[in-house]
Image (cartoon, rainbow, N blue to C red; front, side):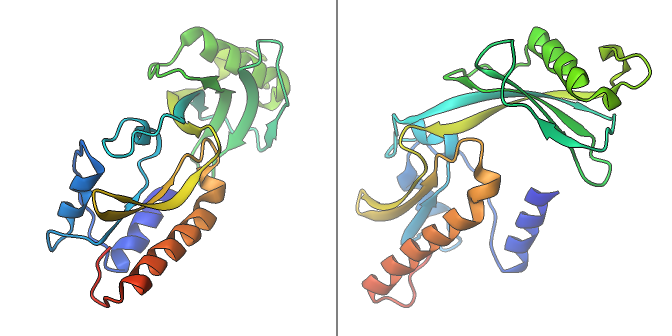
Length: 213
């Protein structure tokens, strides 16, 4: 719900949204409606490690896996660790407006695997029921869970933390804003404000009121 709302806010404020495939950050400026842009904001996340002109070797995937179920235990809860290894965790997050309940999870550093691991999924569901019996109140078994889907996400981890800074690449200003690992939801607004300050700083120093973003 949140991401479509953000897109709606952008469109309402006159933002033009395009989809494209870039091999180099310098190609982004050409996607502007006028064919040029003076400043590019780079929010490429995990792909900052592979995008030409950026190629940030500090960025790597932190693989997460979840199970989304229809069961609604009415709680949000987590534990600090499990007996299944340092890379696994247990958390239960019931979504709003009938969006199901997220059961997690793991944090596997450096893994690019995009497909769900069925053995891990089984452990996630079992741990979740043990932590919150209200998920399966009749039998206490995994088969009582009504599975909507299995999900895998590759968090954009970065050694040194998020990168929010400006840089000139091939003569064009780029404001970087990426590397927020698994907490982009929490830190998105603050990082956006910092990126905006850098963009305004570039425009002010250029002295060109017609500069384009």
